[in-house]
Every structure is written in structure tokens, then in C-alpha cells.
Image (cartoon, rainbow, N blue to C red; front, side, top):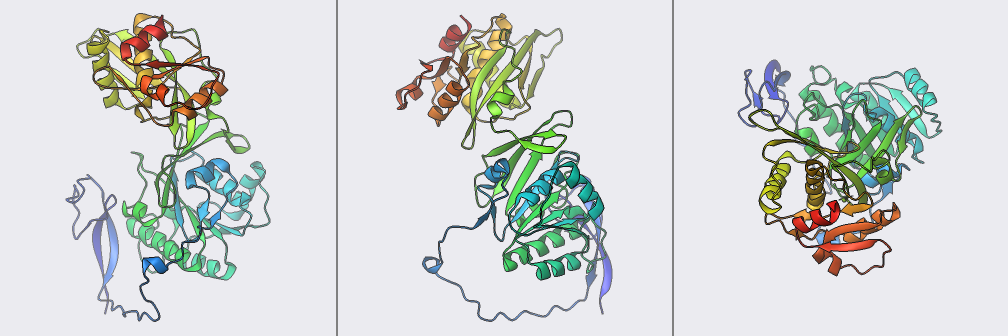
Length: 449
């Protein structure tokens, strides 16, 4: 006879305990244990596997994977070319960032049969939102339901090629007594959709919420279960949104998609470099343009620096979109190798447009922007600066330099400063002036003269 008992599960790592703990002994997270109900004494019958045998790797077909296009280029770019049949994609983001809007727009543009399951809105509310977004599709079917077994049964009957779950925190498996949104319900419902997708060969897009600290709500195991994890980032006061993959079993995690939130929904940004430089003030110190690379896409971004005297003991170092520790290293290189005294000044660094860049190719632009504002000398507004700065003040070569040069030339810049080693490897012909630089001091002299 089964008995109902209570256990406590860590929402971060899934660790279990029979009593509540303030700190998880496995992952060290505080206040992460939640109460869960489970049953003991149930006998599980062993499944008999018939006709299942392991196959040699050489005998498995290597045919090209089948992808379902969402017909939203920015979304397909991040996915690696489209949805893989039998895969599960987790789309996470802050409340109000546009997750449901993106999912509904993608569902309406897919040419095959799509089932949109909503646990947060009624069918009438979804219709009102679709009317506002000017969405109309005969292949899109709406289901307002939260019961897992009912949804799986309908999937079996309708046989859609894509299923959208909005959101996983509202789904409930009636076999468990836990309420919706708990660790057990999120884990079991996701696993059920994954098993059904692999067996029936359809794709699933799961919309997930995030916690106050920006992590995906539910157990960390959720991110390991799914095939692709995509974060939809953006500030409430900023109209631009960035789609970024943090896990992708069928593509790269370096690609990003850029959207703009408008009255009629999310609009794709085909030329993000022009958007990021649209409001640029050319004749002001501390502003330098650089060329970064997100996956295969070159982006021209304006690096803004503000340097002010510090009247307190410890000067401030504040960054937006750039690594704080990397900034500390570059400031030390500026002092030691370029003889620019900045230890008694506050430094505020910003990458315009709200984008986040973590590649070292923008090091030189960061150094030049800081020096420009400190010395109150305007950097050449028609120049693009690229290069990694070493601890000795030398400039190190970077990858895919010709893509960055082509993007700079396309947007009308006249000159590009880059490492001397990169200049030797350029094979294409460009109209833009290319200058090879060997050291940080040489770059500062050329750009600020």
C-alpha cells in the first residue's frame, strides 16, 4: 500500500532531503529547498524491450538533419538553421520581454501544422493578441489547457509538426499531487514532452520563466533535459531585444538574433550595426567604434567611456556590456605601457545599444575610448579600431578580420586600425584604408592626433 510523504528538493540542482535545509549541501545555494509530495510503496513493473538492439556507428544513416523553418531569419539563425524534428527548445526570458509574442509569431509563420498550447491565456485572449500582431494562419491551432495527459492525448490525435508550450510553469501532471510550477511538475512535464517528441518526431518550443536573479525558474536539470536553451534578453525601457543561445546540440551558441519591439510585435533587425551607430555623436571625446563578431555576424559597436576625478579613497569602475575584470587589466596596461595615469580617476564604460560583448577583439577600442576621454581629445570619427591588447602593450591578431573590414567599409568608414599581423594575412581588396598597428601607444598616437 502506498504512503504519501514529504521531501524537500533544491530548485537549483535537484538535490533531495527529508528535512528543510537553509543551504543546499550539493550546490551551496541558500533558501533553494522547496516542499514536494511523493508516494512510497508503489511497485513498478519492469518494461520488456522487444526488437531493440544496439547498432554499430558505421551502420547508422548520416543523412542531413531535417529542419523546420520558422521563417523568422533571426530566430532561425540562433537555432542553427531552424527547428530539428524531435528536438525540444527552451525559450526563457524576463516577464514582458516578448517570449510569448516571439513564440506566437514563429508559430504563425511555420508552414506546417502547429499546436499552440497556452496555460496562461484563454483562446479568446490569444485571438485578441494575434489580431493586434496582425497574425493569421490556417495551420495554427490553439489549445488553452494545463493538464499534461490531455495535451499528450491531443498531440497523439492531431499529429502536429511543432508544439508550443506557453509556459512550462503552468503545466500539471495529474499523477503528482504537487501544484503547478514546483520542481517536480516542471521536471516531469518537460521529460514527458521530450519523450513524446522523440517518439512521435515533432518539435517542441517550451516557454520558461526566469527568477529574480536572471536564472531559469525550476531545477537546473531542466536545462540539461532540453536540446536547446535560448535566452531572450532586453530592458523594459529599451525597444531592442537580443536572442542568444546558451546551449545548442544542433548548432552554434555564438549566434545572436536582434529584434525591435513595436506596436505590431517583434520586428527583425537586418542591419544591427546601423542601429547601434544610429545615434552616434561623432565629435565628442571618449567615443570609439569597433567591430565585433557574434558567430558569423560582424557588428559595429560604439564604445563609450567617461573618466572623472575621484574625490574619495577608492575610484569607481563601472561597466555595461563589458567584463569588469577585463577592464581592470586594460587599465593596468594603460598605466604601465602607455604612461596614462588613471589610478585616481573613476572610469565608466558602456557599449551602446545594450549589447554584451566578451571577445578580446574590442580591447583596443576600450583603451582608446578611455584615453580619449581622459585627455579630452576626440578620436577620429571615421576610423574603426580592432585588436586584442596583451599585457606588454602589444596588439595581438584576431580572427575573421576580413568580415570586420567589409562591414566597416559597407557603413562608410574611411580607415580601420588593426594588428599588424592581421594586415599581412588580408587577401581581399578593400577601398577602406587599412593600417597595421604594433602597439597600444602607436594606436593612441594615430587615433587621437
